[in-house]
Image (cartoon, rainbow, N blue to C red; front, side, top):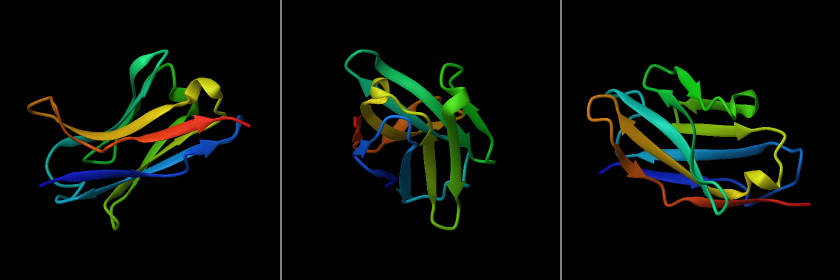
Length: 120
């Protein structure tokens, strides 16, 4: 059974960089053909796709967030990380890590989500 777990600070100051880590257990992030993805949900915007890192390490970001987003991975610890720079209160959201298969195209496993608040 694959499990994903987000971790990181719950409070970030405006203009700083938000950094979250997703730890994956039950399967290697380099195995198979999966996109390891960050998605967020906020009251004002609903669900918003942020970006992903693929099984080969390739990344793709939402055009609206691309200039501030970086997703990387640590294969030795089976983790992938989101960094979102120059945050504002509009980046306040519940952040989820999830996995989507290339073939099936569904998000099959999700983390429980972590609340991040941007406030001074």
